Every structure is written in C-alpha cells, then in structure tokens.
Amino acid sequence: MSLRIAVLGAGAVGRSVVELAGEYGHVVTAVADSGTAVVDADGLDPATVLDRKEREGIVGDLDAEAALTAEYDVLVEATPTTLGDAEPGFSHVRHALETDRHVVLANKGPVAERYDDLRALEAESAGTVQFEAAVGGAIPVLSTIADFGSTHITAARGVLNGTANFILSRMAAEGLGYEHVLAEAQDLGVAEADPSFDVEGTDAALKFVILANVLGDGGYSLADAEVEGIQSIPGSALDLAAEDGRTVRLIGEATPEGVRVGPRLVPQNGTLAVSGTRNIVQLETEYAGNLNLSGRGAGGPETATAVLSDVSRLS
Amino acid sequence: MSLRIAVLGAGAVGRSVVELAGEYGHVVTAVADSGTAVVDADGLDPATVLDRKEREGIVGDLDAEAALTAEYDVLVEATPTTLGDAEPGFSHVRHALETDRHVVLANKGPVAERYDDLRALEAESAGTVQFEAAVGGAIPVLSTIADFGSTHITAARGVLNGTANFILSRMAAEGLGYEHVLAEAQDLGVAEADPSFDVEGTDAALKFVILANVLGDGGYSLADAEVEGIQSIPGSALDLAAEDGRTVRLIGEATPEGVRVGPRLVPQNGTLAVSGTRNIVQLETEYAGNLNLSGRGAGGPETATAVLSDVSRLS
Image (cartoon, rainbow over all chains, first blue to last red; front, side, top):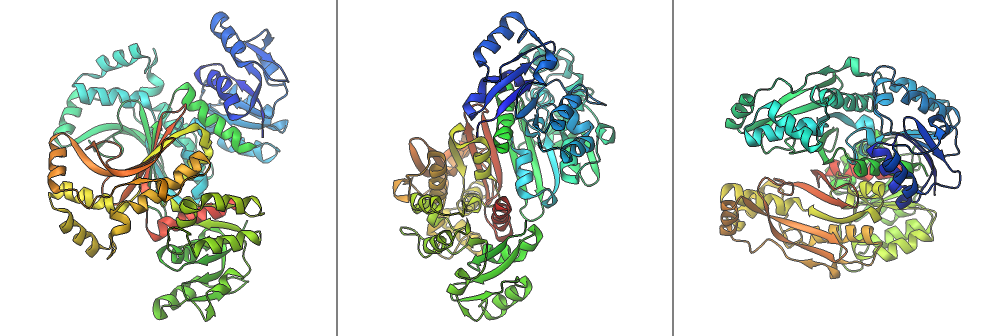
C-alpha cells in the first residue's frame, strides 16, 4: 500500500528518504528543513525539492511547521538528535501521534531519552512508532529482535559507532596516534569537526540505551548508561594488544544489568573486531546461540533504507 | 495471539517445536512422527509426548495421518527433506492450505523443488506459507529480505552448510585430510553416517535455490543449480591457500544469473570464513551495501526458534 510521508529534517538521511521513497512505492507530501517547508498533498517531485535544497539551501517557501500539519500518513523524524528533553523531535512525534498518524524515527533522541513518554503517547494513538534507523543504520537489529520476541533475547552487544571504529581500526593498522587519525577521519568526512558525540561514546550509548529499552520494555535514558570514550587511548595500548592477538574496539552492551559503553580488548580476528566504519550487533538469544548482524551503520541511503523498510511495515 | 499448532515430524526440530511452543504463547494440538500421531484439540502436554517418543520411539496410538486432519491453525512441516516431488511434505502442505490453514516449513523440499506450485496453492488459500527455518536455522535471512523488499536485494551468498564448513575449518586448522576429519565429524554427530547430502553440496544448494526463488519470485529448483562438493579437496589445497592468507569454504550464491555452490578461496580472516558449524549469509543490497548475518544454521532449538518466530508472525 502506498503511504504519504512527511519528512522532517533535510540532512543526508532526510534527503535520501525523499529520493528513495518512490522506489518503495510511497509518496512524499511534505519536507521540512530547520527553517522552511514544502507541501503538496498530491505528492512532491523529489528532484525539484532536492535541487532547491542544494542550490538555495532551503526546501521551500513555507514555515517549517507547515510540514507537520500537512496531509500525511507517516511522519519521518530525521532532525538532529538532541539529549535531555529530545526537543524539538519529541514535539514533532507528539503532534503526529496525537493526530493518529504513524511515526518512523531516524532521530535517536526521543527513543533513547524519552522512551516511556513515547510509548505512552503511542498507546493513546491509532498510529504506531518504528525506529529501526536509529540503531545501526541499515542493519536489521530491531526487526530481528521483534521477530525473535524481545523476551527471548538476553543481551545485545557490539560496535555501533562507525567513527570511533574507524579511528581504532586505523590506529591499530597504521601504528598512528589518536590525534593524527582523528584529523585524517575529519578530512575524509568520517568524523565531524566536533567529534565529541562519537569519540566520547555518547552516540553508541544512545543506541544501546534504545536496545535496553526495547529488550527491557523501557526505563532507560542516557543518564543510566556507564560511558567511556576512546579519546585517551594511547597508540601503545593498541600495540600491546596486537602482541597478544587482540585489538581495541568501542564496545557497547545492553544487558539486564544495564547499559555500558567503553573501549574493550577483543580478539583481533574475532567477530566484534569489524574494521573501518562497519557496525556489528551480537544478539545473545535464549535458545539459538548468538546471532551476529553486521553492515553499514550510517550513511544517507543506508539509513533511509531502514526508514523506508519501517514505513513499508506499516502499510 | 495464541495459535494451535500441528507438528509433522518428530526429529530434533519437531521435538524442539513441541518443547518450546508454550514459551512463544502457542499450543500444540497434534504431533506426528513417521508412523504414529497424538491429537488433543485442547492442547497436548509437551513433556508427555516427548517422553513417550524417547521411551517407546512413537508419539501416540493414532495413525500419522490423524495429525493432518486434527484441529489446528498452523501446520509445522518438519519431516525430512526429499528431492524431486518433495513428497510426502508437499501433500501435507497442500492439505493444510486447501483447508485454509497456515503452513510453516522447516522442510526445504517443497520450497526448493516446488516453489511455484507452493505459491499457487497459497494464492488459492486463506492460509499463508512461511519458511525461515529452511534457510540458515536461527539466522533471520528471509525476514530480513522481506523487510528490505526482495527487489532491493541484488544477490545472496555465503555458507549454509555447517557440516561442510566444520570439515573445511578442521582440515585447515589441523592440517588433516578429508577422510580423517569426516570420521571425526561423524563421531561428534556433526556429520551423518551417510554424509553425501552435506558434503556434495546438495543441502547448501537447496537453501540457495530457496533464496533464488524468494529473490526472483520463483522459477528455480535443484536441477537449475550448478553444484560441486568438497569431497575431493586435498589437504594440500588448504595449505597452499593458507600460504596466501586464504582458505577454502563451500560458498553458495543466488544471483540474477542463477544458483551456484562450490568450494571457493576466501580471505582467511574474511567475513565469509566462519569457523566450525556456523553459517553466514551476505545480502548484497541496492542502497545499503552488504549486510552480513551469521549464527547457528542448524540444531533443534535453533531451528525451532525460527519456526516459532514464523508462527508468531502469523498471529
């Protein structure tokens, strides 16, 4: 069934959703960036919207709020992740659910920081909430948990930040120091100008908080996570690890004991030692051993694929 | 929603389905092995059925056919895989669909050898057909393809036979010959007394035929697959590969060009070089790079988990 989508956020993910929605049989009826919006209840032409964003830096002539009150079946929330009250993402989600529309989030904020509030709103709505894109980009982590039944998954662990993983992979492979590799990652566009969200472990922690919420039926926010970053790992630690056949990765885990993220020693050629920007999630199951799911954890088309799979699940 | 399940086949998978159904909220109303059946429309006691099977080698006092005509919502077909006409599994499936019941298969035969017939029966029925357990045991291969949309997956490749993978892993790790390692695998219960189905590549080929049918909307059977086994690989080939940082695995692939299974050189620490009896499937996606899914590809509880996830999807 073809659904009408309103896309909030015109970063890499939002733009890819606009571009690929037609491939999944859906139509985009509204798009907003941080300042403007464009709306057409009959369906927007993706190329026109994306061209204007690229040429003029805006998507349309309306106020951004116009997208939220447009005609749509599914709100795709792809604005930047914020901590604490998770605004303005949370209010966008609230509006959609209160008007009985579905919500698909790529934005981690509302799902990590206000999971219980989100589920309470969903319970009062005819709409439902999906957020596969918020955990591991294209990797089908949440759909696999849903398929198995969350009560049959005893823990989740793995690598869910590609920037930190790229830096650690390069430090180990080239024998270079953190600052040097970080600068290189920034040149390549793998790390942001301000890399703190990734290298301090916050981004990975948000994803494992979401996993803890899904596995434990809520109750977690970032404040509950024990988080350590990779900023102070000396190159010598990676050399020492290598002598022992091991390496260092920023590993997160969501278990019944809570959420922890930090640098850990793992076997050099082991399952969790993915290289470059790849992500991996290991699900520990009750009756079926460990399942390992790996793939591209970020990127516009990759994350948009997860968003559009969620949209298709609603139809 | 609780569904009533009839289980045909009382091997490792069928018995695990009987044992675990209650954990997934479902009830077993009929069980048959190759010669007998037991039926209770109010729900059987799993322990009683499994005890009798273990003590007496039978599940009940009725003819096996009684399970097929019992009261149930879902038929679980877990009888041994047969080639060609895929009987008697196919007739079991036909009966369930013609009486508007759902079917979940662990038996690969009907899905690999008579996919188009199966879909034709499903089209005329109020019931639906699921078969996650037939490809890679507990690994969520088919549900991931369904989530992405089969048209957005361009190819599937990987290791889908644990016995062959165990033999190749051991040959490489221990420098032992094929016959020696095969005997060891037979002692451990990893290989059958007659190992031909696994070592000749037939089992892996059936799974990749199923993947080709799912990705290409039918048209494939085992006769369309190009299949080569591992029986004639000399230990020296593995030594030579190792000198070059590579090893040998029985790799299958389903692409628009067809189905192929055979021994291939792969990087020693690469994604496809899983060790022991583990399985891995790599899905090549249109917009999201490669997804790697690995886990236990066989075993009673593992495969039963896939069966029961399929059952829960129906409710």
